[in-house]
Each structure stands twice: as structure tokens, then as C-alpha cells.
Image (cartoon, rainbow, N blue to C red):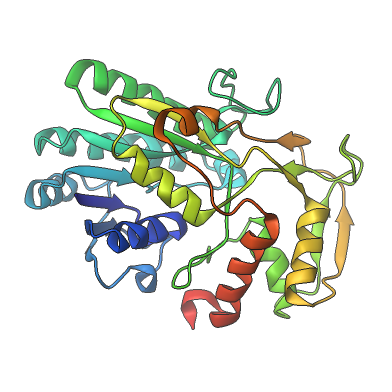
Length: 323
């Protein structure tokens, strides 16, 4: 297929583009490079530097390329920032997303895979979290993603624009070529590995008295390659749908740090700090629906496999894409 990957210079988009190209799809990448990196663009793909906020350019790009489908990763995704600057999140994640949808309609492109998030659920009533769990976001980031999910329902009902929304939990790991390098790094595994690389003195643990076996928060980590395969399966979905993506297991903060110590051979000192407001003790996905309906099967089930792939990439690129 001919696929336009919007946000394809970012962490998840770059690796999805790589896997698409490995499977002989034709890929174009559209990214404004505000969060992504030019060096994260696979050289086999056509690259267009552009911003969804520019409705005219977005429309012209879709009209020229005429892709068979679009993958949409272009969103701001920092929970804390969304609490400080909600306007940025609603403008980019909703208004700019509408520019993309309208450009797709104008170009008669009717298939979209949307990068959503578990933040649409807020603190869950139960775990594991399935698709029937009530969605009650507690920050503008989650609210913006949920709003766009609802918009997609109407664009399907009114315009026949078919979409699949994938609600990730904690994407992690790397391919051999591409990895995780955010300008503002908030994710646990790369921050722990920065300590192993000697770039930070310690890793912070926020909260040690949660109602979990070791007192630290538990999260569901999913390997980025498994995530990419889910996106490709979503291209073949027979109808619009929403799927949660995780492994169905979970690892605590302490378990992640211990895995990083084992894989890197470094001591990795920790600094214990008070819990952050709004951090649920457990966030674990039920991915039974996507397994049942699309046949998705994660290959990297162990935390060690995820950490090992990330460590190999960070050793090769210790300063990320700046190297």
C-alpha cells in the first residue's frame, strides 16, 4: 500500500515507517520536526517537512500523494505540559487533526490509523483495562485524544472515513536503526538508561508506598516493534474500531530499574521522592479484542527483551539523534 505517516520523524512513527518499508509498502512521511528528528526519517521514505496546522499545505500534500491510507502520530503528548498549556494541546491534537481529516476527504482517502492513548481512560475502575472501561481523562492531553476519537466516529458515520484508534500503554524499546529520543524525556526506561550511560547521577522513583508488591507503580510496557505490527494489522481492519494495546502484564518501577541494572551491568543509583498527584498504582491493558479480531500477537513479552533492545540502541547513539 501507499501510506502517509504523519509524525513519522518521532519515536513511534519512525519505527512504524521502518516496518512498513521492510514489508515493501511505499511510505511518505509528513512531520514539522518540532518533536521528531530529521535523522529518524528512514531514507527509503519520501520526506515532507510540514505542519498539520497549515491546512493549505496539508490539503496540497494529500492531493499530490493520494495515499491509500494515513497513519497519524502527530500530537503533543506531555501530560504535565498539557496541564500548563491546554490551548496548545487542543489546537494541535484536535484542530490540526481536523485539517488532516478534511484533507483526506478532499483527496478521497478513507482509511486512517490513529495513535491514541490510555490517558483517555484516566484512573481506571478496574484492571486490566479493556475497551469497555469508562473513559474519564484527568488532563487536557487525554481529553484531546478522546475528543478526536469521538470526531472520528462522526467522520465515519457522515463521510465514510474508516479509522482504527490504537490506545497504547507504555511504548518502549527500539529497532536496530531507530529509538527513543525525546527533547523532553519523561519516560522511565530511557531515563534509567541515561544513568547507566553516565548522563545522569540517579533515577527518581516517585512514590514507594503504593498498594503494589514492592510499593512502586506498575505499568504495562509494550515493545515498539509489536506496536508497529499492530498498526499494520489495523490497515486491514474491516471497519472502524478502537483497540487497547499492551501485553496484559505489568512491571513496577523497581522491576524496570532492576532489569536495566541486569542488562547494562551498571549499579544505577535511585532517589526516592514523594508520589506525583494523579499517578494510578496500576495501569495494565487487556488486548484481547485486537488479538481476537485482528490476530495481533506480541513477540517481545519480557521486560528484559524490551530493555535489551533499548540499551543496544542507546549504546550506539548515546546522545540520541544529536550524534
